[in-house]
Amino acid sequence: MKGSGGEVVRAQRAIFSLRSRSKAWATTSRHFVRLLCGLRTGSLPDPWTPPRSMRDFRHALRLLLHRVRRGNPVAGGSFAYLRVELGDFVAFIGAGNILLEYVIGAHSLPDDYGHLDPIAVVVVSIICVLAILSTKGSSRFNYIASIVHIVVILFIIIGGLINADTKNYSDFVPNGPRGIFKASAVLFFAYVGFDAVSTMAEETKNPARDIPIGLVGSMTITTLLYCLLAVTLCLMVPYQQIDPDAPFSVAFQVVGWDWAKYVVAAGALKGMTTVLLVSAVNAKTGTPVNATIVMLAATAIIAFFTNLSILSNLLSISTLFIFMLVALALLVRRYYVSGMTTSADRTKLIVCILVILGSSVATAAIWGAGGGGWIGYVITLPIWFFATLALNVFVPQARPPKLWGVPLVPWLPSASILVNIFLLGSIDRASFVRFGVWTVILLIYYFLFGLHASYDTAKESRENRAEDGWKGMEEGA
Image (cartoon, rainbow, N blue to C red; front, top):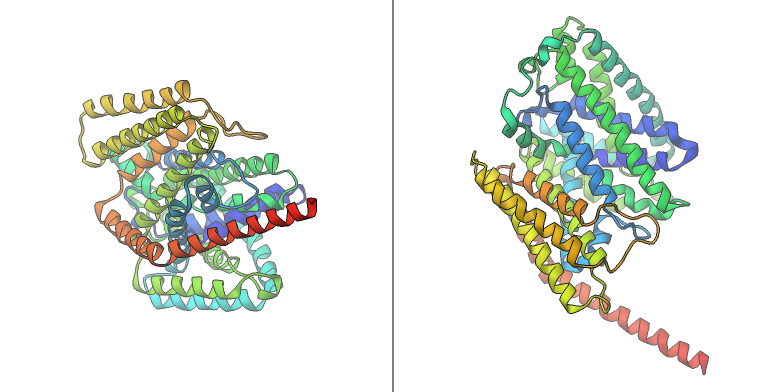
């Protein structure tokens, strides 16, 4: 599914261009047909129950809030934002988790072909060869696939609603609020990939206008499709009868449309393949083939030795962690400017941020511990509220936006920190252990190699600036 990040990028690129708005629907549809028709949702806790559409909408809203939090530099993704505002160390940790996202997400695509993981390796290898050999051919293939996916989506929605039964919604929240939030933390996996749109800022004529339009437009399209498909599925059959390995195919079989399952399966199969295909193109176009081969090789290894049920939680932790860091970076960007912010304001900013983080972690810990009482939330949530209020009232903004700015600062990024950390508290302990192991590996690499490379680069940059300064003085003289 995270390989779907490439799909989402293409959808957003189409929305940015007035000449290509119709392509946005086509490319976005491939992501959702593959996700909803092919993903083994059995790895998700409480995945297919009537509140599914509510969770989908909440994911989209939270993701949209994450997108508009950005200060939009000239170009770059989460790594660029974190490096500018929080430094090389935090940016390196973020980059390592972004890499983990893409590898795990790409794994979810071939893994959908079945439990025979060697098949996944073969699929990844074939896609890698096709992507390297033919750019024009892969483009045509994706164009045809877009049409197929739109047809499949319309078929699922219309055919499913024809067989809808409102009685299937009678037990709306069978597992209670805890089941909803537990599934939400993992279901966020479906929305990974939208952050890549920020890397295209330099490719637009008016980034201040086009980037927000692209983000909101693509999120609106995908959320609408996702919710419609989720509602359709839950109306077709009782949630207990939904097959986690092939939800729509089996649902049509249950309602007596046996032939329809082949249509859905064909759309899902097409989607799984094309999402992988668009992740690399021919080297003649300037795309690094070596990087493509390395990434797909890593994906093949993971696809062979692991399964989606283990990696989905790990990916959610990585993604939520990065989103929290970006929200934190936005607060730093708005309220701190080196050489301008006074020491008193800097101290107040640090205290407020620490209290916001601490109260958010405490809220997540209370939820994760399974405590049913409300006393803990009565303490932690007001602390978060007053810390955010203090930041808003007592710390002046040092860097107001020049063009398009994130609204409701500091409330929006502070709420994002709270929600992302809260959802982290819904993920199982074993996944945090795996995340900790990955973080330790990143730290070892950073202190042995990355730190030295960063120092050498900074030193060389200072020397170049000094040399340019002397040249300027000589020319002026």
